Structures are given as C-alpha cells and as structure tokens.
View 1 (cartoon, rainbow, N blue to C red):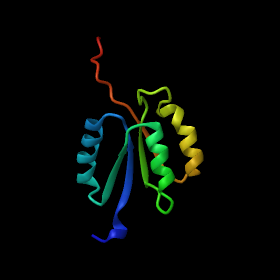
View 2 (cartoon, one colour):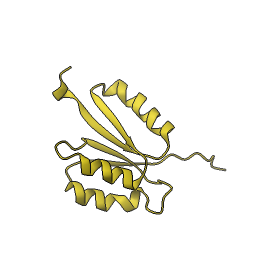
View 3 (cartoon, rainbow, N blue to C red):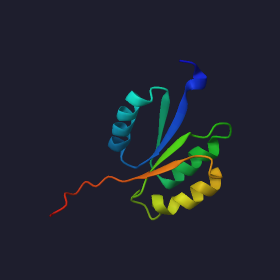
View 4 (cartoon, helix red, strand yellow):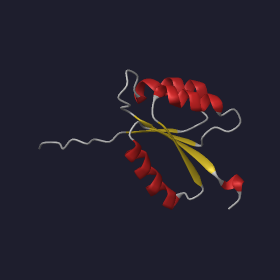
Length: 100
C-alpha cells in the first residue's frame, strides 16, 4: 500500500472506548485509513490548526461531548473553518436502556 493511498479520519469523542470500537470496525472496511482521536472542542481545533497541508478526509463528531460546547455547537464552526471541504458525520451513543 502506497503512502498516497492512506487517508485520515478524525474522531471527535471524549470516550476512548468509543473511538477504539469505531477504529477497529472501520479498519476492516478501510485498512488504508489512519484514525486520529481528539477528545474536546479545544483539542479538535488545535489539531485542525496544526494540519496546514492535509486535512482529514472525514470527521466523525460526537453530538454530546459533555462540555459546555457540544458537537452540535461545533458543527457550524467546523464547516466554516474547513470551508465545507470535509464531510462531517454526527454520531451519538446511548448508554442508558430505554424503558418501554
């Protein structure tokens, strides 16, 4: 596999097990993908500010980052910073069991 075949997927989620699960599952379908995990709004913006030459090809953004600013709040700013060039998929994990 050539280095040019590789691409980056940025996972924005504060819970390491969620990122690990996503990475393991996706690695089977996309072995050329390199996964990078940021765990907060500030860490995400810092990471993107450092990526001058190559942006991620995809961002998986947790809706609930358990911060004052959540994934929904980040979405407009991310789109503005990235000028709409990177697809963003919003995700959420529910750990509580729903009572029916």
